[in-house]
Image 1: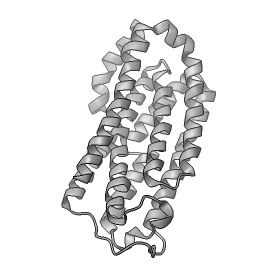
Image 2: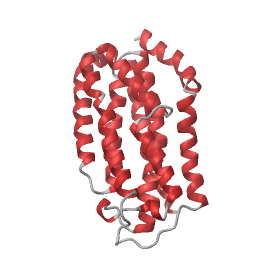
Image 3: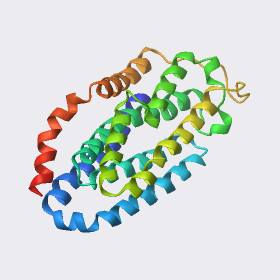
Image 4: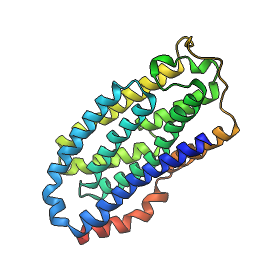
Length: 252
């Protein structure tokens, strides 16, 4: 039940983020085009500040669940940059990144807030170490989701980030260059978290741990498959977006 609860909770939070992006598209850009265009530089500046502040705040976190939560704020800043780029690439990239984040972020929350916490009873990074000794299958899946969170190629997050940054590059290269630091910063805190939890000498504070069971495996795989499939075949989503996003931009 704990994994279902975490999945439901993260699904609700992710739906809120996606609904917020839909609000930007349906209300702000569609009904308030002049105001959106006028305030775009201000919104882009706020997004950049949020991205950098949230990324550095993420790096110093010692709570695994809180670290993943702060990383979501940084990724949503890239989504905002894409949405307010007023370009086809930027808006489509923002939508792709929001969808990809909807798969990867719940999976990471299930890993750190569900599976690891259920077995260790703590979320403090300093007390968790050497999980690969007892949980090799979980460590592999955790590693794949960590890479997807950093935006590696063949993942939906990669395409979303690249298209969002390409879109904002067409409007303001300086904002795009600063926004691209999210790639480096996300790699820093994601790899830091994975390395601290998975490797090193087994923590003396931990009892012998069991690897993931079938239910947990199916739950994580169900989130991994669409992340990779849509990352390899993005036109499955993009073909349905071209007409609506193009109509939105050109009508505005």
